[in-house]
Length: 114
Length: 114
Image (cartoon, rainbow over all chains, first blue to last red; front, side):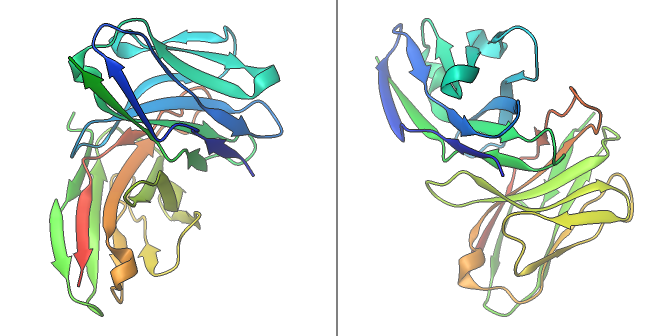
């Protein structure tokens, strides 16, 4: 079975600074990897996804993520955060051999200070 | 398209009561999912469905039932509500075709069991 770990529960970043959120996964084969964002009181919105091909994927809102097979990681980055990026971010892994079953990480809460 | 809609938005139940959480999608997605989200935790998969008439258990199915009579609807039933079922419930849907399995989430139903 697959699993996903987000080591950072909470991150505080200044507006305009760069942001990196960590995600590590455990899975025997090449997984499907996703990053979602959840604003307060809202559902989850997909930021980006990786299925295959180029290991650096671009998403919405200026986010990107890099799949590193050797490190079993799929870290999310943004060069310059905006106050509107304050939210909770979830990494998720889908299994290529058990379609429909996703595992979500526990989430990382991002606080943006002026 | 309305996407994924959920009703109600909020509900208070007494212990032992039953209720059905409604979920509808208008994107003609084959796959539908029910998750629960507890404070400080990621999403846990309760049940999912790969098409009308086909459902399967996720990670935390105990205390819940589902049915899928149409492509559009995927209701979640709580038969005997317990305080442990206090949570936020999210419905999601996705295509079934590989490389297209992006899950689209509804806004959530907040349930309080007292």
